[in-house]
Amino acid sequence: MDIDDKGYIVTHDSIKGKCLVATKHFKTDDLILEEEPFVSCQFSWNSLYGYRACNHCLCPLETVTENVIRLTNAAILEVPFEEYCTVKDKIQNFVQCESCKVWYCSARCLETAYNRYHQLLCRPDSNDSLHHLEELWRTMHYPPESHNIMLLCRLLATIELSPSPHTANQIVSNFCHRTENENEKLVHKMLGEKFAEQIEQLRFGVLKSMTIRESSQWLTPSGFKSLLALIGTNGQGVGTSVFQQWSNNCKKNLPPDQIELFEQFVDNAYDAMEQVVGIDFLDNEGSALFQEHSSINHSCFPNAASVFNGDHVLRLIAIRPIEPGDEINTSYIAPCELIHSRHTRQKYLQENYVFTCQCIKCKEQINDPEVTSDDDSEMEDN
Ligand SMILES: C[S@@+](CC[C@H](N)C(=O)[O-])C[C@H]1O[C@@H](n2cnc3c(N)ncnc32)[C@H](O)[C@@H]1O
Image (cartoon, rainbow, N blue to C red):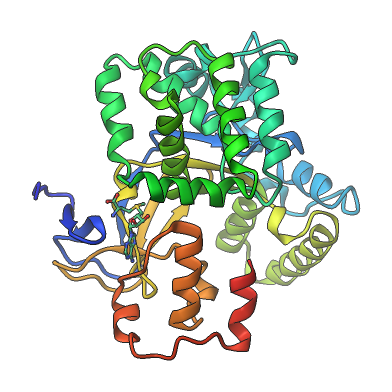
């Protein structure tokens, strides 16, 4: 055990592997940890469909009015209380990569991205093999998106450009240890029925697009499979939304007599957005790998939740009191799905994450019947 004074330690459990355990008391809503990702990337379809986010930190690059016009297909053209839009004052800081023209929210993000991975991935020519790889990925992986080939490329580029490639390779290896068989099942889950042929297409696509020296261990057939599986199990979804930021600001700052107008507008806007893009497609979305956060196991009775506040920085928040010695857990299942039976939850986790859940709730319900109730079947179908 490496004891530190952060309020948590990483321990090891013989079944679950690494675990995050509290060393102090956290009350509900306390911040447990805040973490920048090792690597993050916007999803391919999300970017292609014009969800404008910083190419490094994923923060929104459109104003709330531009966002509402886009998501309602111009059914709504004006947004009240625009002064609460956080993006308006930042537009003057936006910068483009001079070569490939992707946008960043600031010169700092551009510089960080360039130094960490972008100099190896910057491709002004839309006919370049890296763009072809991304197109190939899109033909294999339709929205709603959960995984991302460009995250994998950024990861490899980060190793290549690291001042210590050995340490960077070690960090990547530490994310999750699995058997070849488990990797195979996970990649099958990510890519679907034609996975065996697709995985090789993707591997060749990466080899053709990037000059690999320091990270070549990940480009062998089995190395590539474990890299995809690693992204499948540790990839954390990241979402940002200027509309959400504006709405939170309005709730905090508007005088009581304006709240009704605000709420009416929000209801109308959500209705219009639902008709045009659907409620699953409101945010800038991507995925990321977080070193500390990746030690957190799932529980069907979680005591913590991961939240984003406008960019790719993850905040882990206590959602109920946590005592020293308690394992800190989030839920890998959407909160509204946690009411389902043990059988359904276990089946979902086995199919999507390839593990048998050993959380307190599943242990308590071990004698529950192995049946699926009617309400559960929808989750199982997903
Ligand atoms: C993001 S990692 C969490 C850290 C992991 N324990 C490790 O050693 O790297 C996710 C993996 O942890 C294990 N895991 C997470 N929650 C679990 C649970 N409730 N029961 C059993 N295994 C679990 C599974 O192997 C899962 O694929």
